[in-house]
Length: 276
Image 1 (tube, rainbow, N blue to C red):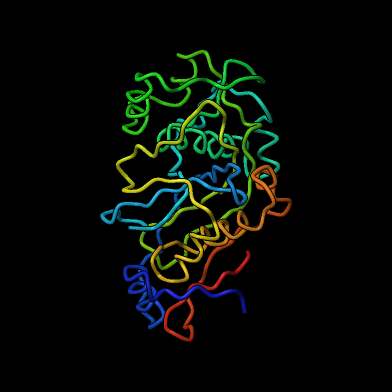
Image 2: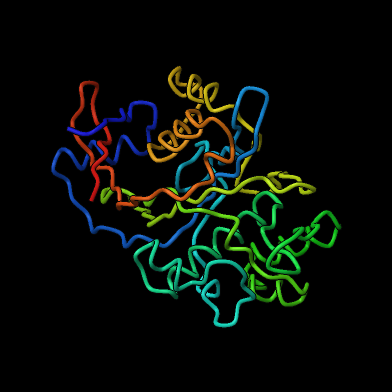
């Protein structure tokens, strides 16, 4: 038996899981590609991670503490996207997918960081300082990205920047359980907080954005005062156990696809972690 996560504190998910366990079935949703990023820095007691609390009106994971991230935009795979660091072909080997898909996942991770917290892992060259994104015009750029009026490639070309794929690492690969009406095939990445940039959490999808101490968040989760999905819990535990932020930002060698399965646990419906 794998590790189980009770769903008693997540009413929306718990209701659907209970119905599924009772034998009710509906068409399984096709998972949508997504990327999320653990943005980390060193704090007074060890690594800290930047997290958002999703607004309660969100259709997926309302009121949950999450890392910045979101769905892949097809334009993230645009041919000719300004790129530096390991190529999409190299990333494809690590993620076990096509180069086009690998580019989408990596580009989406970097785009979502900019959209949701104002951090941009891109610079004028393949090495050296990253772009400064504190000018007020970047607020409009972020809004245009969110509204899909521009693509990441457009922004990079306009500003003379290249995406820095060497500044993120792959940490985990999860897919949403089959009973969920909204499903995501998500790659979890990690990156160090760049100097001279500020993570601000200026997004309409969150009502709270802050740097968290993993051990404190996990205590709040255990007490029921903070909500997280199983993938987030496991990633936060990994950050808690790392000696430093740099130790977090290291590629995970084995990256199996993990999909929680709904089971009947001691206190009702639960998610059990099963590697595929």
